[in-house]
Amino acid sequence: VEGGELSIKLARHWGYKVKKIPPNKATIIFAQSNFWGRSIAAVSASTEPLSYTDFGPLVPNFEKIPYDDLAALEQKFKENPNICAFMVEPIQGEAGVRMPT
Image (cartoon, rainbow, N blue to C red; front, top):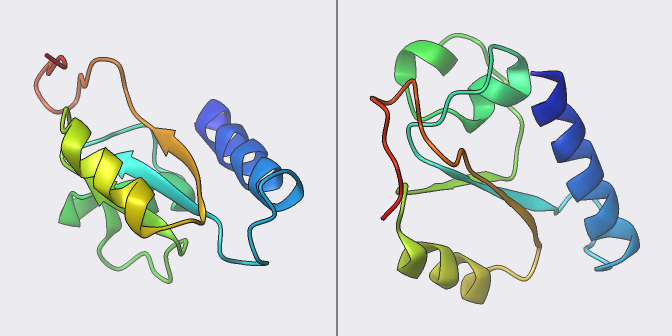
């Protein structure tokens, strides 16, 4: 969990300082069916209702796309200039050992 949390902090910091994203607008994209912990940030990134229901308010500006969908990722980057990171598991273990093609 700590690694994921630090990654979010670093991505946002880079977004604000280097990419000049307006304050509180930095967006991070996650692949659906992700699992990387049970912190508020981790459950905010989740698409599993059992992980996030009744734990709000959740962390804002987290968007999700289908796992292994390059076209969806490209579309998000075209639509949103405030994206500072894409966080993805190389192999999704909790989702059934899913690997990208």
